[in-house]
Image (cartoon, rainbow, N blue to C red; front, side):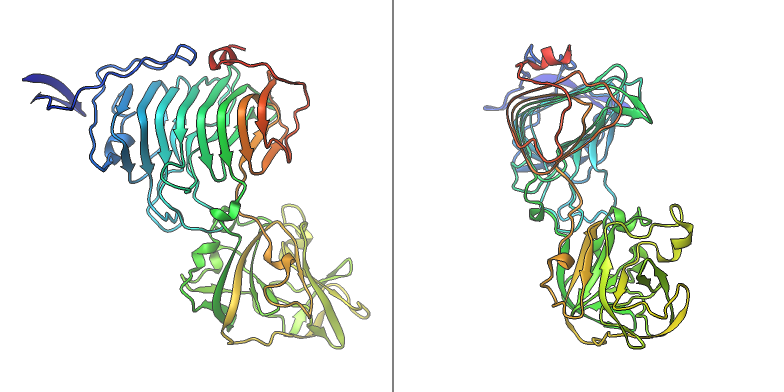
Length: 493
């Protein structure tokens, strides 16, 4: 008979136990010398699981409980809700091709009980090391902004210094569900380090590496990638900018009659950052209607639309373009005998009153191009004749997130056949880094859009060997060296 002490918050109990045949306590393997030394693992509690074991409370409180390390010996676990944990000290997670499934299946972040979007928040003093753990999520709904939680987050702190290393991780172990890239990470004056070794990732959002630590202040962020495959090339596998539904418009309300719901449109630029030039539209028949923001959503099935311009209407005439403030107008409409030939919403609409006080009432509006502006002037009232003729007609329709992409329609536009109307953006990109990061990439396959901006920061160089897919906006201004380094060597440059 053996005896072991088990720590539970605010109490300690003694438990007698016998080790059954075929079950043994497992001593963790030492960390390889080539990696930063993680916290020592002292008396890890082995976990023997049958099937999928729920460890939600244990995992989400492991840092707060003062643990230094966990060694998971079972094959598959689940954490029902993601709770971000603040990390400011050494911490190690180890497994043996162990899979942990995080979060709710088909999670709707705008309606379901909230869960966080990352597992660990890296603070000054954090030294995270993970080996042999597959971080996965269950299958998610397809909408405009796919749910892609990450491993880490950080903030701009010039005085912080942390490291986070993940080795032997396959985020696709439970299927092509996406999620668990490295996250959005910032540099510091002392230099922060994030690394992925033998790492497989699918979906948008592998990493956003930012060297800046404030306005016009730059730091150091070291990114070490070795034997990494990240694939965000097929955005529509996880999200879509448009949804084909069935419904009708009556009294300035669009009602969905199919099984779909209005929450398909929900995303950051629709729900939160509403004063933006991102457009969301309804396409029905040959017509388009602007859907302003979350305030337009009546319920799961109904969307409030701008009223059609009809009858006496005040117009704005700017540079030959006609706007109908707070009203929806269409190609084919008439002012007397003057026909509206095109309806446009371009990439650079009239901005809000922060940028253009005179244009605030038509901020982000589409405009019409008339065959003639003879006799028309700005701010005049005219007799407007609407061409809208689909009132109450149930039919196929598209809910579309355009992003900041333009669209236009004509009197002869056919439903569902105009690429200008249908195309748009799924919210996300695979990599979005500052040029000023310090990058080591060896045997890296990067599929998907690489976005890059240039900010302040101190890059110590780019070292790249046998890499694919670094294109699009990828552009390092210095020399890209082919020097091969271990993680330990890279961390010391």
